[in-house]
Length: 396
Image 1 (spheres, rainbow, N blue to C red):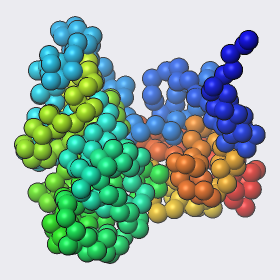
Image 2 (cartoon, rainbow, N blue to C red):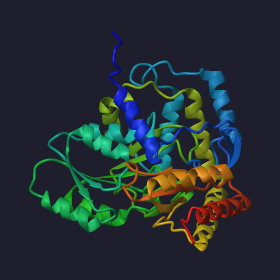
Image 3 (cartoon, rainbow, N blue to C red):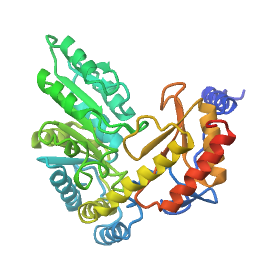
């Protein structure tokens, strides 16, 4: 008797997505991550990466990675707490801590691991989390793993956050107020000064995920805490090494006690092999560029304004974006994915985003420009997006 497939329901779900027009397949990158990249055999303007400063293939990062590999090998051989803490890892953590103006830093294997591992480590089921309704999935998963009680506040609404904390004022347990610095799907900036003031009033731990603002906002890309002048008032800062830094990983910054605690209790740190030497060395080289080439950040913002102004002049809505993250509103998920496919065929890679990444009825194309794009490339991208948008009746 033939064995029945107990996972047949997964195939049924995949077929349902295909019929609904929301199935997406992975596109194959066949070149370096550049402003014009080769995907699936086609050269396209790449508006789908988080490579904000164009460092993913920077010669200095490549050179640092090669030298580290030659000196230290391809891998570290163990988790950090056994024998996998290399000189480069500690040097990188010291460098990030100095850049972020904090006592200490710990590097994780990804930004997702940094968020989920930290929230779940510092809280217990008796504690309370006050979280923005549009916080990143890694924050949400960390909240769930902690088993703390979760209280969601309205997006970017400090009054709503305060109401949640006020209602918990006499309730036992620690309180953690958490927000993204920049929200990854809309590109808007969290109201950090107001949220920090609320956390101070109620004695809450303040935590900010700065993944999409590190390298983008603040002096030389120091992030939203620097952007708003809030040094010393945010207890836990999370960042990424996978976006503007151009490599891979995440990190947590804060007090020495926080970092030492995470060394002992953050499960992704405890149970994942440390970064290869090439990754740590390339990240160090990226921080050199942050400090020494501020013109890259200037180009990023110049390109952002040029691209977003072009889209708005063509009739597109870019929502409330205040950063290089540029949502192009569509509404219907199937149409957003159709739009993305049409753009690819015409020479632009820009990803369709639908539920559950964004709420039902708020599907969009998410485009991100980088410092490495030329004005001509961005103007051509706006032309292609506008032509496809008119053809699909997204704009008049």
